[in-house]
Length: 381
Image (cartoon, rainbow, N blue to C red):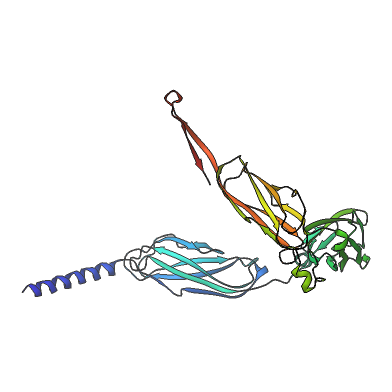
């Protein structure tokens, strides 16, 4: 008897639940995906339309629509949709600057209890617009347009390299170029052709002689120029110059200097903003031939002094003194010191200074007459 009553209760609840569900709103999309097909990047914003029907009894309401990046909801049915009636959602996509395939989502929230969140999709392929000369040559200097006005080279101390800047004349007149303030290690500067016709392409050729630069590591130069004696521009040439060890024999390498640092990574304890953190890195020559410290360069915010000695005999040591000014800085800090030597195995090493800088935000002072101190409150971010 109890079993029959239990099954009757289950049956009644099922019937009631079904009746309630049949009386609620129910959303049904014609399609969950809108395919734009192929669209052109230059054609502007495109719009796709999704249609849906309320297959329930209660009014269907669109409560919220959230689009993924690159897609927007331009319009949708904002009034309640009656039983059996249709509504719509319009999704737009801007292809500008987005060549290639795309697949975006829209999350639709409704009062349909069975499907409160429905995801719909847009997809397609954006055909890239034809590139113009402004696209190919985006940088303007004087009256010329450049693909780039910065060249970066890597070479050894005995190398000379030839490179070019590609240029375009966007004007309606011939352009000629004249250079000024040219460093002695940058030579053979000329534009080819020497007179660049309107709407024509050319190039500026130059040579870089590292032996004349007589420096090591990262170096940076500016070259000034003017076109038709009317407009001035600038080109930039940087280089990483490595020492040439190609001449060394096996015996030379066995006798070579070997740099050793007592601690290449110095981590300081948390300090209050405004303090200066000092540290000495001890450099030792563990090789046989003299170790020559060619260059010491610290990153921004940190200073490193020239060592007391730049030439170390076998077994000799020297200090590189560093000072990190924490003013205006807080949180985790990392500063580097680049050291270049004539050690053929480790000619370029990086030392580091790192730690936490805290900003004092408050101070609770105790009663000095009672021998109470003060409590300082800090924050690191």
